Image 1 (tube, rainbow, N blue to C red):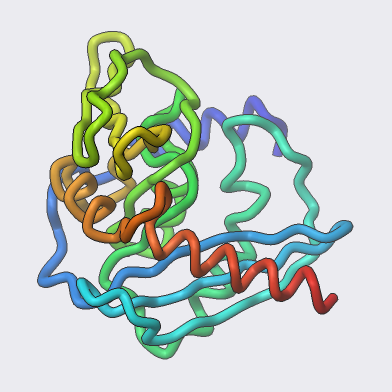
Image 2: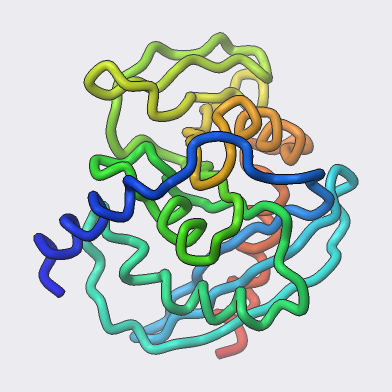
Length: 212
């Protein structure tokens, strides 16, 4: 579909995103990363026990990329291979954490919301950079956070996960409220800026790139 059609679909799907907690006890969290090499993509998913954060399972899937990179439409490019990797897990994780946006997106449907909705799995967006919205800078101490606003709507939070280090941009993906998103991301950060879910999934995707 054209970019215009894709954005119309995003706005339609965004109305189905649940912005409140619809999850039970979180025992497993999964990080997701996609590695690219040429015209091929590898989705890497690492499932961690929560809150200990030891590895419980992992899966990968590869697929040829057919959609160009267009800002704001990442899920159309990487979503199919991510869904392939999710299907290869023996058990669906309790919560997905994406290295990307949830509702902190112009159409309120970033990759965390889109894949969370399609897989019917609670999800969180934890991005390294801002896609839209305005805010003040949080205090320098770990755990400090401020709302991320867009046209009067709270679409996420800017969260300091390590004292004196650049913050991350946390937002609701699907079936989770913002407070839970912040709490889980902080619980998954063990001395680094990014949560262990993202770090371990990135490492698995990098292994695929190095051996292919």
